[in-house]
Length: 348
Image (spheres, rainbow, N blue to C red):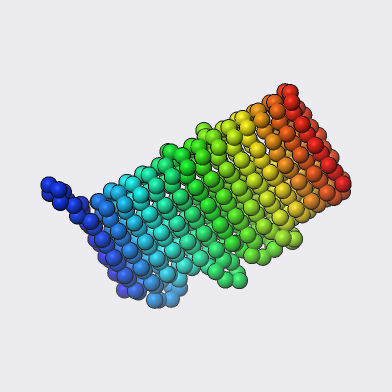
């Protein structure tokens, strides 16, 4: 039985009178749909639970809020195919969405200052989470966790933050295979963190991308854990354009690759790969291919495995590079243009 619940609450001003809107919806059954439109200082709480079998098509919740101090709280417990679209425009908005099982997607759009968005997607396959924030001091978090021994399969998480500074984006994925995560930030003083874990040691193929452009003093961190096994093949890419940015890249396991690009001054970075057949950039065996353009850069790069190669191209001054490789078949090639650069390479 299909249930449709529509609530439209409008903020009305009558002299100095102020109205605060609250919408609470609870739905039990199959194929539920909820649509809430609010204007003002609003609060919405939606709880949807699917009681039928896998043949049911899940549920949908759509919320549009305009004003300040808005809060959205949505829980969807379905066998499959839940969808949430939450749009907030104003100041100090908060959005929280929790979805269970597979083929679910959530989209959160916030425009204002001090926005917070959290998306949880548990124990499923083919999941999609998109959070877009335009403002200052925003916090976005996506957690796509395993929830069971089989783990999450083919999950996608995207966070985009524009506008002011001091934004924070975090993505965690515990996946069986093919997790994709991306964070894009276009301002200064931002933090971007991606953590990807492999539930099993075969055909995981996780991908992580962080792009921080037109800003300074940004932090980027990617951690990919794989362990030993065949065909793990995690990929990590970090691009920073600005001054005094920091990057931390850590990959454990076999057959991983990473690419790091820096444009600006005073950047520092740390890259660590532990395992066999890993590549920073592309190649066979362990390979570091790092290009840095700017001044006052320093970095620490470490590889633990076999068939390692380090290729470094630095354009600038006052750069410091420390490369340590442990294993067999090491090769290091350095090209420096500028003055005051220091490179220390240790190969065992």
